[in-house]
Amino acid sequence: MRLVLIFAILASGVFGGTVAAQTKEAVFAGGCFWCLEGPFDALPGVMETEAGYTGGQISNPTYEQVSSGTSGHIEAMRVVYDPEQVDFEKLLNVFWRNIDPLDAGGQFCDRGPQYRSAVFFADAAEESAAQASKARLEEAHGFTIATEILPRSEFYPAEEYHQDYYKKNPLRYHFYRQGCGRDQRLRQLWGAEAKVKP
Image (cartoon, rainbow, N blue to C red):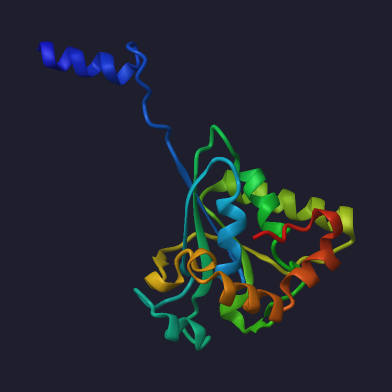
C-alpha cells in the first residue's frame, strides 16, 4: 500500500517530478522524404521524425516497390510532436512552405504518384484544419492547390539508410536538393515565406 502511494505521489509531480508530455503524430507527403525531415526537425516541439511509406496496398513495402510507382504508396514523413509546444496548424504551415502544392504529378524533379503531396488526417479536427489551411492559401495566393487531404492509413518506416539522410550524407543531400531545383521553386512560390533550410 505504501509503495502504491509513493508511486502515485511521484506520478502526480508533487515532489517536483513531471509526467512525460503526451505526444501526437502527424503524417505528410511532400515528394522526396529526405527533404521534409530537416524542416520538421528544426521546429520546436517536434520530438521525432521518420521517413516512410503510406497510402498503398502492400504491407511493409520496400523502397524499390514504392519508387516503381505501382505500390499505391507515397513517400511520407511521420512527425511526432508535443501538442503543448506546437500544434497541428503550425505543422501545416511548415509543410506547405516546403512543397509545391500546385503540382499534381509529383514534386520538383521527382515524378509519379509515389511523390505526390498529401496531408493525412487522423480525425475530423485534423481534416477540418487541413481543409481550412488549404482554403486560406488558395484565397491569399490565388493558388489552385493539388495537394490531397486523405485519411491516415498504415505508415511503414522506410529503410534505415533513408532516416536522417540530410544529416548522414550532407554533401549528397545538398547536391540532390540543388539539382532537383527544390529551393529555387520554393522561393518562386513562397518568396520570403519559403522554408529552405536545411
